[in-house]
Structures are given as C-alpha cells and as structure tokens.
Image (cartoon, rainbow, N blue to C red; front, side, top):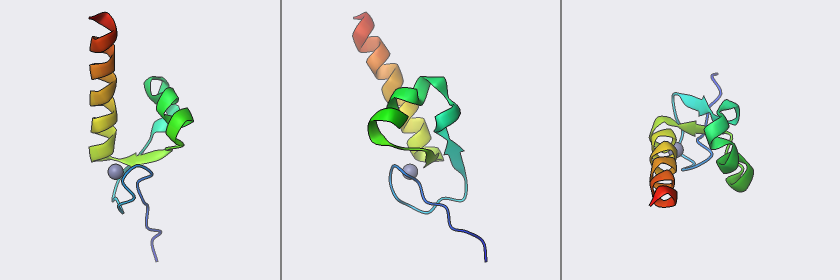
Length: 59
Ligand SMILES: [Zn+2]
C-alpha cells in the first residue's frame, strides 16, 4: 500500500510533493510555519507571495 503524502500547507493529499526545506528562498517559510513538503499549488503560491513581498520592499 503506497503511503499517502499530505501537503503541509493545505493538508490535501498530493501525488507530488515538493521538499521546500532544501530551497533557500523558502527557508523563512519553513521556519515560520513548519512546512516541509507542499503540493504544486501551494509551492506556486509560496513563490508568488515571495515575489510580492520583494516588490513591497523595493517600493
Ligand atoms: Zn497544498
């Protein structure tokens, strides 16, 4: 029986999870929220938010 993997962010079972603990840009997210593996959608969201924050800082 295959192990069901759940996204740490949305708690939905995902076929593919991304290990964000190895991504330097998301180290802050890992530390703050305790996320370790997230699904594709949450992964994209996290990166989008990073981009937005960067824009805010520059403005
Ligand atoms: Zn998710």
